[in-house]
Image (cartoon, rainbow, N blue to C red; front, side, top):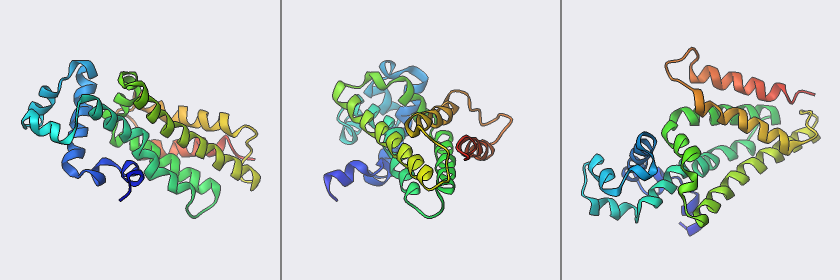
Length: 202
């Protein structure tokens, strides 16, 4: 596996299940106590391991933070973007992408919270690395909308703006979704998909 392929592979597949468990644990603690309120020793104790063993998986706390944020800003797009190159009409592919994005938020609530609240705790280089993934995702969706407009499936004269509006709508779910709420995540995913394509109907 090349270095580029390693960077594009989510932690659960690249570093094994234990590494993914540690990232999930760190995400939960960062959400509960804030990034600066959690130390490596605390993380190690919560994982029932020696601090030295934790350092075997991660060089420092920032690397753990980066991997937690990458659950959202790298792993999401690695899994999602192939949908836009898959079978079906542009509308059908957008529906699948929106549904998958919504479910990802529900399945990774701690990581989404960390990615939205603790991004600025990263060093400038790592912050920029995350932003590359965010821009790639948005640009690819905008390209899909433009392609769909050319195919006559969408009415979209500003794909970049519309892609940002769709992402703002979906990502806002992170602020209010309650698993015990009125709607299930699948119901929300279906309704968000309808909202997304409805605003693009010619």
